[in-house]
Image (cartoon, rainbow, N blue to C red):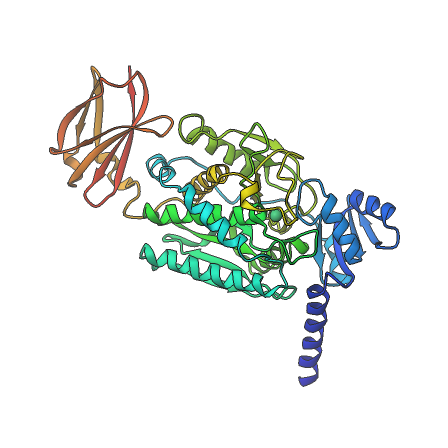
Amino acid sequence: MKKIKFLILAIIALIAFNSYSQETSNFYATMSLQDARELKKDLPNEVEILAEKRNEAAVYLTPLAGHKLHDRVLVHGPGYIFKSSLEEAIAALDKPKRTPQNRLAFSITEDALVNQTLGLINTQNIEDQILELEAYGTRYHNRPSATQAANDLKAKWEAMANTYGRTDVSVRLYNHVNTQMPSVIMTIEGAETPDEFVIVGGHLDSTSNQGNNDAPGADDDASGIATITEATRALFEVGFVPKKTIEVMAYAAEEIGLVGSAEIAQNYNNNNVNVVAVVQFDMTNYNGSANDVSFITDYTNATLNGFLMQLLDHYNASGPHQITYGTSLCNYGCSDHASWTGEGYMASFPFEANFGQHNSNIHSPNDTYSLTGTSTHATKFAKLCAEFLIETAKSDGALAVDETLIDTVFVTVNDSNLEYDLKASNESFTNIEIYDVLGKKVLDSPISTTKGSLSLHSLKSGVYVATFVTEAKSVISKKILLK
Ligand SMILES: [Zn+2]
């Protein structure tokens, strides 16, 4: 028993040593076969190709090779997936690629709640948090400041949940085998089906090609962490209680081969955790392309990508919350979504720009907030994040659309007057809000009787949503057509 214990400890120590010193020691990884061959051509003594399968290779890299790869990968991210041993690297190639199961029935039904939330996303909060994270100087995974950043983020998320009185929220550190830096996970427990998980994430660590002591990582990826934090804060402000469990993840050690997310995704899969969808936010604040959002189409799930595009079509086609989008390619292991995809989960990666047009200062001491611009670009991603969370986790709260009341509210439109009858509901209502198809509130009127009418003469003809708000802050929405 003791011997076995010692052996396990020795193995863990060896693995730990291997990864903590990735700056100075050789290590195993998987990567795209093409990248491996090109790297081998440039640095014949720094790369060993151990095995090839389909378009992937298991490799043994020197720190120099890892670094070179980092600098030249197509978009960003390490370009390889770290493996703690030769066996693990080879096994990863042999692992049958699972077809992701579509575990989610996608629908867009939460207009009132989403529209309310979009108006609450605060650009200043995103800027503040990017600057906060940049101020660590470096968040390279093996620096004490990286672990400090994780501890501080845990405290920040806990304080945020407390501010909004959320007893259904908990925050934990997730400790890893292959890095000393912990990931941070915030859990909002699902009110109806807590065993179904919806996940959004970004990576908390940073890196720099000039040694790793000056690695501000403002865009890569303080912007992503600030994006998911602000989206979640807005959900708290609107009182959103999800039916499914939501987890917000700040991954450790993405830059050394997706180490944090790989361990988490593998652990979730080993424990049969039912993750219905995952969205990664890595680099959200550099506006480099004509489109606001570029959906990465490789190593992601087409169905989920399509749903995110539908959300933008539905909620952000024009107006104050307008968000345009296109598609682009990334690269092997270009961010943490690849860890989830690799475990057979549905994952997407909306990125700040098209292939090659992203922030060129990343992985350098120049990845600072002041060189990126304002947070207006990241704000768009926070809106998408909130839409995704509300529409996939769906609402179950007091502030949410009350489906039991939906058939007790009657509306008709006559001569541009909205006539309503709320008597059957036995609720007391405070006001009627009218939203246009873009989600913009165009009328807001107090209600004093359960049967009455509201003039819509000021509105152009078209489709609108009439939302009735109860004293208990439930909302009931009805689509109306104004001729
Ligand atoms: Zn990144």
